[in-house]
Length: 98
Image 1 (cartoon, rainbow, N blue to C red):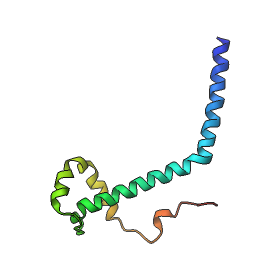
Image 2 (cartoon, one colour; image 1 turned 90 degrees about the vertical axis):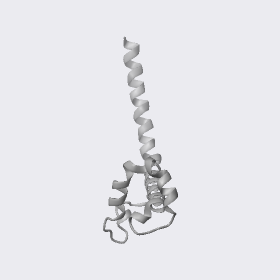
Image 3 (tube, rainbow, N blue to C red; image 1 turned 30 degrees about the vertical axis):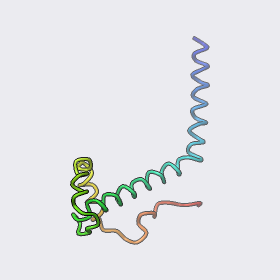
């Protein structure tokens, strides 16, 4: 049983080091990738269903073909697109090198 206690302590230390280096190097990249994915998804939704907001880009035929796949996301997308914003409010919490 003593061997199990020492290996679990070793695993905890290795996990702590791995999480430290992830936070040091990978967290910002992962967070930025999630933001980029969200922005691309909103742009895709605008291209397909922009006519709901008064921005017709694609013919409604393609939007209706994809409608069953995006029904759960439409309400959150519309509220996000119609939210009042100021210039620069998307990145006000980023420090970028500070």
